[in-house]
Amino acid sequence: MKNKFKTALLTIGLFAGSIGAAHAADGTITFLGSVHSGACSIKPESVDQSVHLGAIAKHQLQTGGKSEARRVLIELEGCDLTGLTDNTVTTTFTGAPSSVVPGALGTVGSAGGIGIMMTHGSQPIELGVATTPQAISVGDNTLEFGAYVQGAATGTIEPGDFSAVTNFTLAYQ
Image 1 (cartoon, helix red, strand yellow):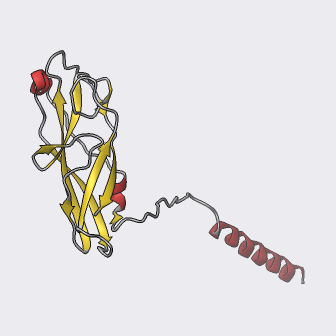
Image 2 (spheres, rainbow, N blue to C red; image 1 turned 90 degrees about the vertical axis):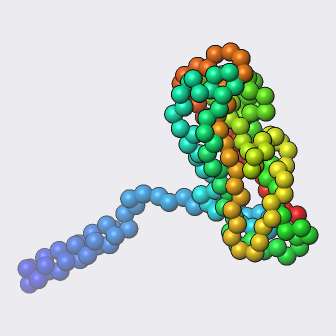
Image 3 (cartoon, helix red, strand yellow; image 1 turned 60 degrees about the horizontal axis):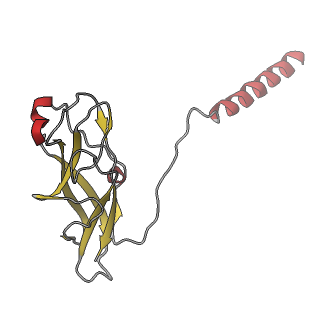
């Protein structure tokens, strides 16, 4: 009888231990997002993104020189044009302006004498001013812009790392 009782207790103990192990936390997942009243949703990879501008040779930026432009995409999904009059969207980029390159986004880091220029087609984007309207259609759409590093017209280009942040706002018409 003692052996049966010990076996039953051992079985209950193992069963209870396996239940606890099945519910152990090994990590966490945080879900982030927002709800807005715009005509389109913004794909998650477009909400917060990084654009790598490359490792640029100093000589390429001297006397106002610039790097190769890189694509900046804002991907929209599930667009519903109900209530829009022109079926267009404008984008306004904001951020700290460069103190050495007029019209450019300022940078932080050890690199100096540079700024980030953004374009819409072949036109430079002015910080805080809406871009030319872009046509959108029902469903998914991609807004395309460009960005490049520009050196100051005068002064020294200092080698080093840099980063810059711009925020964007979409306005549907």
